Length: 159
Image (cartoon, rainbow, N blue to C red; front, side, top):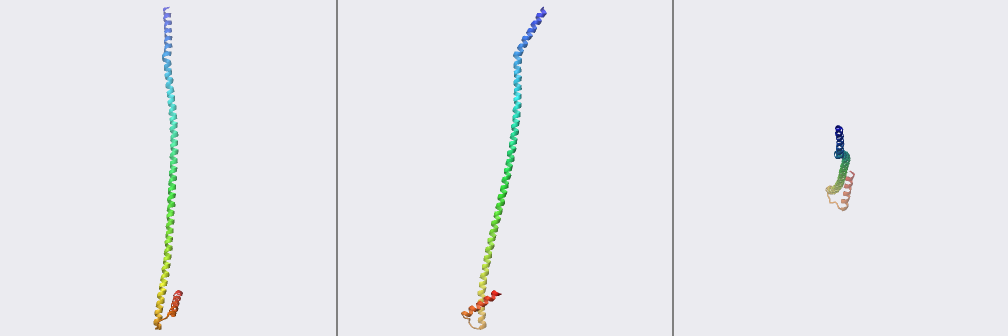
């Protein structure tokens, strides 16, 4: 019976030890492993969430960059249009100034021609009177003078 009693005592001791190990070691170890598993799961979820946020931020950055490029192209296009409009306006003004200068030059030339004709007519009239006086060998009076001038002017005008 000694053997049986020892065996029973060993079995009871083993069961008590097993109970104590489960209560003292297994429960905290199991809780520790569960906590570790929860932390790992949370870390994976956080990493996935951060990856998703980074992807969204990247898409947002790409969208902002695309919008900025479109705005830059629009600004460049508007600046080119403004420069073209300014150039066309300057060309138009220059053409107007040239046209005005040509018109003024034409007027001045016409005035100079008119003055030259008048001067030429006076010279021709004086020369005609002098020639007539020399031919007639007498002094030409007022009415004769006017008649000779008219005839000379008509002759010049007709050709």
